[in-house]
Image (cartoon, rainbow, N blue to C red):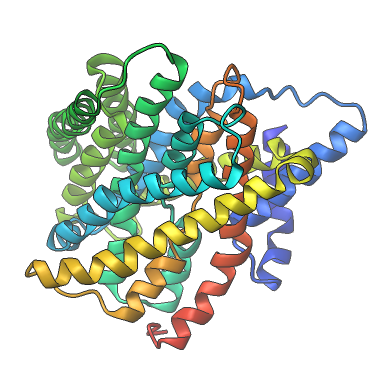
Amino acid sequence: MLMGLLLLAIVIQPLARRIHLPFTATLVVAGFLASEAMVYAGIDTGLRAGIFHNLIFYVFLPVLVFESAFNIDARLLLNNLLVILVLAIPLMLLSAVLSAVMIYAGIGHPAGFPWIAALLTGALLSATDPVAIMALFRKLGVPDRLAVLMEGESLFNDAAAIVIFGAVLGMAMNPSSEVSITATSLHFARVFIGGMASGLLTGLVFRWLMLHYHEDIHRGLISIIGAYVSFIIAEAGLHVSGVMAVLVTGLMVGHAMRRDSRVQPESFVPRLWEFTAYVANALVFLLMGVTVTLGMFEERWLAMLIGIASVLIARAIGIFAFLPLLSRLTPVEPVPRSWQLIMYWGGLRGAVTLALALALPVSLDYWWTIQSIAFGVVLFTLFVQAPTSPALIRHYSLNRN
């Protein structure tokens, strides 16, 4: 069924181009229309909410994170690391908390939607994913530093959001356990930094292998094994952040590949990862389309609107209040106001938000409300923010092409 949906999405992609919609938005529409047609015809799709967790976390996430880390310019990332880490960790935490407070206050139903549900929602909505406009950035030729700031923020805050989501989900599944801010902070630090350390070790191993095997097929296979092995060792073996481990491994392997003079820009390994991430992204957005129901819009439309407004307000506070402050307090190169506007409006929610929403345990009474809010926010970013971003970029003359 998923292969059929992929084919359908490819067939209707020319229509999306004509109406200036991102391909990911086309995938959601294709999944929704196909699933509604199958349900109307009495055909069981076989998809159930409870099957998504392992599929998302152990199959799709390592691919999505590794591909982004593999392709990013490690030197430019390092030069802007302070700004990226501020965006990805403290501002992401601020965004998660502010969103949770506004969503909790807006829904106003402590029994049906308690504080822990709002915190879970804030955590999964705090992961930015500019994949829908990164291709647009390359097409329009925006400044390299702006592209790295947005992609680097997404890489690191995805990892941080997943760690926080996991910690809050543990509290939600064990409501009788005592919550300590100190213990939770130490747990976050251990998981986050432990993931980096694990990724550094696996990255060294797979970087060495990449430099000692020169055939494209071997290198492609080594990179795929590296992505999954780094994730599994960290997540299942060491119980630290698998996403951080994949991120560091991907950065090291990608940097080693680019420094190798024998590797051509259009060589097999980068193309392999472009294809693999394309399929993973496509399947995640198709799954969203398949699981979206009309009932969400009929019964949870207000919660969706509250979620959208909360995310936009929290993002605005983080970008416009704290980035200028960072420039005044540290020697980092200031981020121009026009860039701040692009970073604000281009801070889309995508594959990681969907992955976390789809992975919610159905044993939680409020799982459907959280999933509805997440889907509403992602749909807003795909159908409103992404299509209008080109006009904003051209308005500020940030396009070189």
